[in-house]
Length: 497
Image (tube, rainbow, N blue to C red; front, side):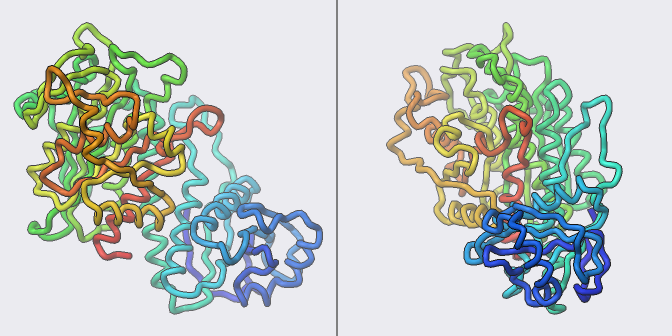
């Protein structure tokens, strides 16, 4: 999609469609738009076909009154007092989808009155990101794709205040980079396990690095991990014919003295549960167990695209978890890279086994903070549903920063405790710890397990089991979360927002 920032007279503007935001009190929140289209808006609203209080409801009209636009699309944005970038994102998604399906090649969006530069940035970035995501399609594995013959190709953002042009430009760049990172994450996650293997993930990391001088990618093979003592990670891959990979992406945008942010993403390209095999129903969705790793690749891509002045390391431990004669058995005891021993009481609690060795590996980068992202527990879906990702951390400031980034990017998190009271649930009679803590507080005890490998640095854990993909039905597919949250956090650290 091309995005054009333009200052023009609305009454004489020629465009395929003029998109006019309308609030529940029947005005656009933009004085120039009101002056140019008030009579037309009133006329169309009299018909009662637009639910102005319902953000995202639309009314497309070929009656454009005195305007030169070919079409006018009234876009309901709800109550003006409650309007924000989140509600605008919902509205834009509906508008762009309709425009794309109605053979509109170009459209011009009138934004609500922008009170300050920050508000302008938020709305424009939200528009770009929402537009890109609403047009996402995954048809890579279909024998015949059916692309729209006249798709929406250009969106013009009408600039009514020339002083805001630089903020518009920055918002477009950021929104597009985030959307590109989300697309990468969604494409990887939506691929089936027979294509998106640990080796394929490693190849994708190399593809992201191509042409970027500030990025280095290295891939540790099983023999390398064996030398490092990664017994927990390697125990998971024993049941698969696909070799495990530890993918390391190093982006150096700042001084070598600047401590990096390290992102660690769970990369289980397929999880059948191992010997503790999962139920057959919806097991196909276990291709999404690598969404944490996919989000790291997406965030690293966005970081490089924006040329951020920051150091970031992305680490993706990747494997499959399948039943086999050599697979982990319930009761097996493995030794992690940290030297701590783990009794494997449930082989389906494998994500924490590959993550714990990756978290120990982080030590060598002397990180400022470490954030791991994983589709780790079904318990998180029970607790939070699909609206928020679970957040647990050993550092309040880091947790607050991630919570704020989630609010600003409309990719929200909710913090859960990891009090010492929960640690005893991981007690084992035969090893330093068990890999599960029983049915109670499963999301928390999983984080407590990981916390035992993160004592040397500030750390946060994002459980995205509920937010990473939509389950079942026509809407089934990856969401690309939490790429938006991660990039917002990196942008803030790099002082770009």
